[in-house]
Length: 222
Ligand code: PGA
Image (cartoon, rainbow, N blue to C red; front, top):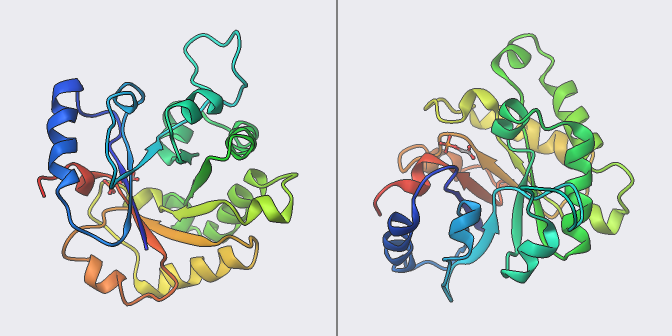
């Protein structure tokens, strides 16, 4: 079981130090991966929690002002990195090609990509959700060897569920997880979107879930 904590654009330096101290006290056997903002990555110290990143450049190191390459993340001991989060697809217009490039750069640096995929409410309502998921998945793994595909973790996060308090039914999640598994030989599939202390008991009944991606809950007092 793996749980990813996505801090998003939150926590200034002092807040992060207090937060890190707080979550370092959590006693758990699961792999806890913390994805702070880029600046807080350099403030990270923990022998219990694993370091992740929320983003990476699609370029190698070089003349790309404002970018952070996989090679730089590697030097900070980053082990996992989110790719294609719906907020980046929406607000930074991250496209299929960039997402595919980012995954390749991460794999070259031995950082595990966590590919986020999921449909909008309109896509679900118009029954196009499977097509969308297939397109997001196949474009992201384009030109990757089977061996590399297996290294990617997939996070299914329906856009309509992120930060809204709404979650799909277990049947809906199971349908998508099986569908994903028919296209990619990934080791792990996570669920993300409005996971909280209450609904996690229902989600736990789904055997196919290998872990969770938490946004809002990652920032709550433990
Ligand atoms: P949420 O966010 O838990 O606040 O819905 C999840 C995410 O965006 O990864």
